Amino acid sequence: MLSRLQLTAIRDQLDSLLDEAGRKELSLRETLYFLCEREIARKDERRIQMGLSIAHFPRVATLEGFDFAAQPSLDARQIRDLAASRWIAHGENLLFLGPPGVGKTHLAIALGREAILAGYSTLFVTAPALLAALAKAHGEGRLEEKLAHFAKPKLLIVDELGYLPFEANAAHLFFQLISRRYERGSLLITSNRTVGEWGVVFGDAIAATAILDRLLHHSYVVTIRGESYRLKEKRRAGVLPRQHSGSTDSVSVHQPA
Ligand code: ADP
Ligand code: MG
Image (tube, rainbow, N blue to C red):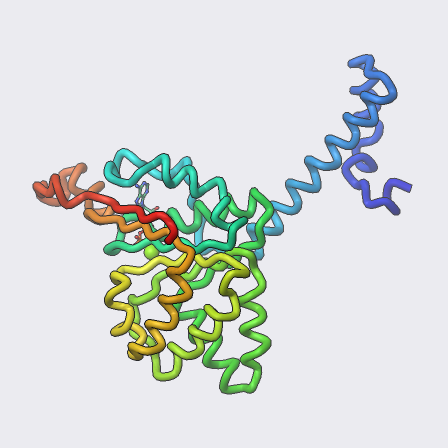
């Protein structure tokens, strides 16, 4: 019966759970509670494992593993607040902008992880991979299917927008995806370009304006300035010469409009 009800944690550990309940002298009601608790814990663990595997994160990165001291101007409280995933519940967007190596991808993965823990389906993709997939599907007459695929997760993380310029027509495909997700799901985008440079990245000023209009409507923009974390580590270790750049580290956070 436990198998039929898919109460597999209780099924697999029934003897030891009942022994434990006996040792603790739990009442019938407490025992039932205890068994349910174990079943839910197992189901949550499975759900999180599954969520992490379908998110396709390129590596493991956590908020605990982020050294806020190394990025002193980044508002740790603001990031922890974003990690509570309320912006995802509200379908808002988040942009991490800044030069290479300052931790944009690290934070994107870490916040994606928190989103999964909070129960939101999440998918990570790099901008070039996303655009290549859309262009390929378009060529094969399966664009609709691909758009649905990328529109489905509650949080879509698009990493490294702007490292490569868009191919012809890519801006239109990206615009279709943005429209599809608009006010339905959240986007987390990382870019080494300022929003003002996106017209150049997209190779299409009109599409860029339309994309930004939807993207920025409900969004947080976190601009990280400063030096690459890896270079900073090397400098600290004495491999590279020290640099005096006290005032270049800063961060600006805009509340949603
Ligand atoms: P970006 O995406 O901005 O180019 P990454 O997130 O890939 O930068 O960061 C480069 C490397 O440095 C990664 O291995 C990342 O985990 C690490 N890193 C960057 N900033 C921090 C930080 N503040 N604390 C810990 N690790 C960091
Ligand atoms: Mg990156």
